[in-house]
Length: 624
Image 1 (cartoon, one colour):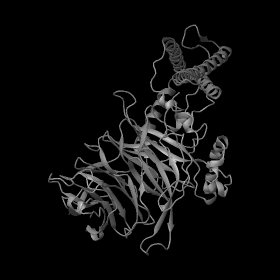
Image 2: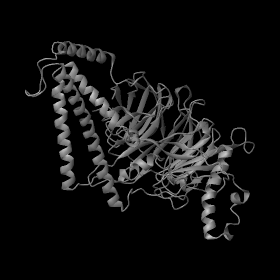
Image 3: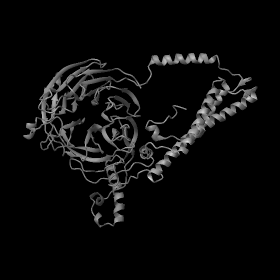
Image 4: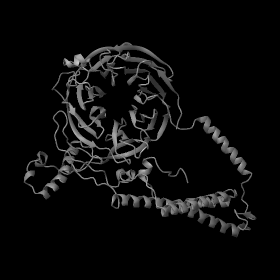
């Protein structure tokens, strides 16, 4: 992975819980001690950051009331030079029914000033009164506000007028994000990822605001990718142009796979893998009338056809996305991920982990590009790329923020290092030239008894070495097949079936272990009802990963271990023997090894494990 410069910046007596960039070199910070008598002030800060991230200078700070909550979330409107955050009022004010917790501040002329507030949380006072934890602003100036009581409010910006009926969720809300210029809203809970189609209804509000209609078009459940169940932590739309949306998501294991083992974290890319059904839909099927008169068999048939019809109707309108599945996934950590961000150009992903590290991934392949091992003393609380993705800012409750320089490229090797390696290679070739030979007569191959006296014995020796190289490729192939056979046998025995794969059906019977789609679900703004679940495509990523990933570590029988060990020992012995043949530095013998390796790979490596390759596992062609 690439190395880069990164710099810590202390924030004494100021734990930072949210940050965002107002420009490439100007950073907004939010945090504090909350409504306590700890003596730690609640503040909003504006800071100037040098291009190399080394220097940080505060431009302004706004102290907030210590009777109010600390700001825990930030969203920035760069055109209006305003920020939106969530700050609960003092307990006395809340009990009096006044809590304009969604607040707007301006930062024009490098001065932070309060503009207005709006109340979106309507709950009775208690010690664990809900607070605003998520804020997302769309390019079309609509604001999504999420609170700890698992409700999402939709507001117009900058008026802060209500734009839609609030969404009430049945599990913990963890993330909000707008996609495709504000036409899609991703609402992420620990148990599902909900995709809403957003339609602006003109003429129902004032010029400064508009009404929104939300229709639930897709529901994605956590896939089966680990021995223990996983839950969503974050999900963001990819800004890269695409005919259909692509979503990058973080999933954390709910528990360790085994006692004392790692609690894994994964990054997955979800995308559409098949188009929607085009079957026609009747008016009776749309309204759902007349189903009570059908027999149970007819009901089951109607259930299947109805789901396809709903998808087809929405597809005709251009709203239905189709069938979703995991496109790429990678295990990124042995501890839960706490923060996640996508660069504005969509090329980079970054995440902060409970192991105190900050990492950057390639958005297409999820290949690791950069990792800062000990970025903070406590787990990161905020993470954000600047608009041009040249700097990455992170924050933590340890009273520090860190600025990380994002390299312009992640080639892996610098120009001086490439030149050094080339020089070493030239030197090695010069030394080998002293030993390299085209000798035919009087050539000894490893053993004294294998002595070449002329062209006939040289040709025969080359044929034998080529066949041995092919046999070596066969041994490698056999060892992999043996492991696969043992794994499938053990998996089938443990599940009581030949494949162990869970079936995913349509309708309520499909559990959260599948990736599903909701079509026309109830949403804010008067959306229609009726949902259907979409199973993963047969033979897709789920078919490769779902059951096998849950198999865990299994102890083999003595017979199986001896068989594997015997094949492994024979493979090692043969590989070292071929190495000794290569060390004769004879052109003909060396060429025979290369030819045999080529033919063996063509003969025995005719398949590729898509699941392993896309997950970043396996050696592939990197190691012979």
